[in-house]
Amino acid sequence: MPALVPYEYAVIRVVPRVEREEFVNVGVILYCKDQRFLAFDYAIDDALMKRFAPSLDLDDVRANLRAFDRICIGGFGCGPIGELELGERFRWLTATRSTVLQPSPVHPGYTADAQETLDRVFRQLVFRESEQ
Image (cartoon, rainbow, N blue to C red):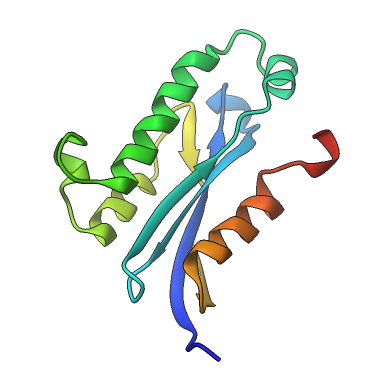
C-alpha cells in the first residue's frame, strides 16, 4: 500500500453578492507537497447560475476560473504568480478575498494519490450527478 502523505484543499465558490454571503461551489484546488501536485478542477452549472445570479457575467467567471487553472499549471506565460513554487501558488490562490470568486478555508487530509483525491473531493463538493 502506498504511503499516505498530507495534502490541503480549498473549494472555490461563486459569491455574486458578497453582502448576502450566499455561494455556489464551482471548483476545488488541491495541493500535495510530497507528490509535487497542484491542480484545479471546476465546473459551472449554467442553469443553476442563471437562477442563482441572473445578472452575473458567466463569461467573466469562466475567464477567472481559467486563470486559476493556468496558475496551478504554472510556468512561462502564466504571469508572475504562475512562476512561484507550488506551495506559494496554492497560498496565493486560497488567500481570503472579497470578490465574486472566493476560496473556502483550507482543509487538510492524507492521500496516497493526489489526483484521485482531487477527483473525489470535486465529485463530493461541486459536481452534481443528479443534475447530469
